[in-house]
Amino acid sequence: MVRSTALVAAAASVLAVQADSLYSKNSAVLQITGVDYDRVIGKSNYTSIVEFYAPWCGHCKNLKPSFEKAAKSLAGIAKVAAVNCDDEMNKPFCGQMGVQGFPTLKIVKPGKKPGKTIVEDYQGPREAKAIIDAVKDKIPNKVKTLRDSTLDAWLKENNETAKAILFSEKGLVSATLKTLAIDFSDVIPVAQIRNKEKAAMETFGVEQVPTLILLPGGTKDAITYEGEMKKEAMVDFLSQAAPPNPDSPPPKAKKSKAKKDEKKEAKSSSKFSKASASHKSEEASSAATSAKSETVEEPIAATESPDPNVKDDEAAEPIIIPAEEAKPTIPLLSESAELQAQCLTDKSTTCILAILPSDASSEAATTVVASLASIHRKHDARKSHLFPFIGVPASNTLTASILAELGLGDADDVHLVATNGKRGWYRKYSGEGFGSVEVEKWVDAIRMGEGKKERLPDTLVTPSEEPVKEKPVEQEPIQIEIEEIEDEPVEQKKHDEL
Ligand SMILES: *[C@@H]1O[C@H](CO)[C@@H](O)[C@H](O)[C@H]1NC(C)=O
Ligand SMILES: *[C@@H]1O[C@H](CO)[C@@H](O)[C@H](O)[C@H]1NC(C)=O
Figure 1 (cartoon, rainbow, N blue to C red):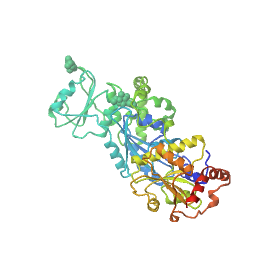
Figure 2: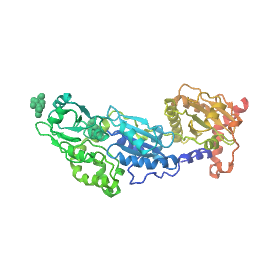
Figure 3: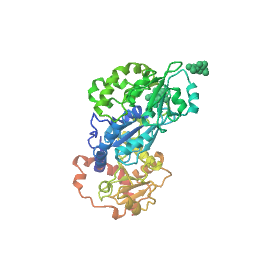
Figure 4: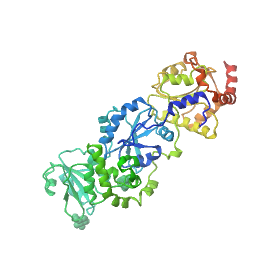
């Protein structure tokens, strides 16, 4: 990649560090890419929590043990995934997802329409228990809660197909049962009945709770489940009536032991639904999972192979656009020193700063980032140089003084401003909204040296400390070219005005 100025190169170094993964291959955390996301998370019937991280980020490293713990605990109930936003191939996707800092945690749950997801930022404590609870809370409940008075009507609906009932002491439906109902959604309706519903208990001769029964359908007798109340075994039990729905877990989800079966696995639908919901050790659950795979693979492959791809195409438009159409992001500088060094020294050439409000997921903030990213990408594709576009989060300690010194106004709004420390000017964007067309007009005006410039207050500009480092030899010629092509007209006007 040709980086045209020392400044851009410096900006790039913030995000383009080695793309080493934070999680090991054997981690319980699914490591996905922007390409996998749609298939593994976006089209899944399960709820997921996705961490967007950079390996160098300290808070990400701090989160790692809790996130691993959450992944183990939620095995078989929800997906716990991580995206390395430092990896070049993931950057456009992370930008598309509106990631503005690391780590960003998003809970993704299936929407009402197939293929549509509801994505929410997780803002709670970065502790395993809080994460687990928040995710469980978002699992859709397809379990019908029945009483004596409603049992008969439910039994009569589709009376030829299989049904399952959990008799429980509790009124609340557990995450395990909710997930079981998702595994068998549209295949085996799942209900829960409290043990105080005496008539129902008697009808099925249930004497203790919890008890799971399977009604195979038609006139066949109810079968009582004898095993432990663990998800994997319960899935097996219900599978005798009908196989669970397919799921497409990523190849890396399995332990290395089973790696040679990766291809097979990718096709296997049942891995996720078979995974244990219990807190037992990773080894045990891994062993159990692989032990199962032989027996369950066949029937599942049979039901799965004809449809998943067709379904994917037919599904309503997902929230995530394909990776190749995804918009790239722009570098975000949350450290005041970095911002100062890149854009606000007496050697700094033009920078476009998007000053973001504390609600970085606001529509204006995501729009401006997307617009700038797409404009930059256009120029990159044409190999034409463009000054750096930089996102400045509210958390950057320079943000307040920039807003105040440049008289930009409310910190709750997005502000777009061009600065040139070397020439000592800045320009505000005052267009209608932050759509890419509008913003691009403004950017083009800056490139052409048009528009109103104001004097950049000296208080914002520091002397450049390491001019040598900022101008590596090989970048010298490019630097000159930029000055001539793009900054020259601006320069002229500036002298007229100031
Ligand atoms: C199922 O419903 C149909 C129609 O209501 C009825 O004729 C049939 O007997 C029912 N079967 C069972 C097993 O209850
Ligand atoms: C999701 O659930 C639907 C039924 O609600 C089912 O048809 C589908 O196969 C399931 N799995 C996937 C991956 O969509």
